[in-house]
Length: 242
Image 1: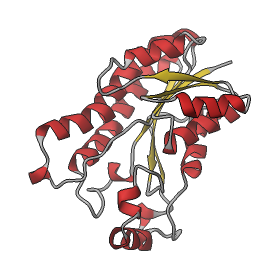
Image 2: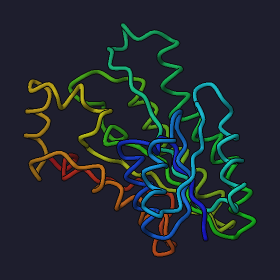
Image 3: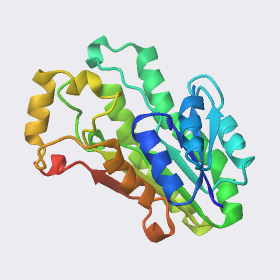
């Protein structure tokens, strides 16, 4: 059984990705500060989930990889953990800037670097980073300069690793959701002054569910996506086509 590791896997898009990967037959590690409740719910359903308790902001990301490898190797890495600081650049502190950049970008690199040798040994691997529609825009109606920068930089990392690791059997891609209704985005969709103009720009006329994003992300982690690497796959209901 192939083993997957999903950071930020206890809620939102991360949890939806865990569920989709389990449905596809992977054994999945749920990495977050408190994964126990989510894992207990999944294992009660007879699913092959295991907990990877870790605080990626303060503990070495390599620790999560090691815990997954101990379950039988590592074939899929999904980095879905994230934070946001919604402030204009002139009000954004350097420590806030570094916090966002570190979790999204630095941790992505460190996780991938730790995971790649195990995938290379197996001759098969999938690495999926979570980007955003802001990978291609300047952000939304609320200024998020650190988040936008991090998500844009992930595209460069995705392309660099995809090129370097293709001969090892590893595919690296970036999943870029548009606007998704989750706890993470509640400050935006819970405010009609923000929610209404955003929704009006989406040709499909609504925000996505985490499950809709996860179905595409899980596909990128399968054999069927074997000829797809170095790509940013946007799932945004047409938002960028507006």
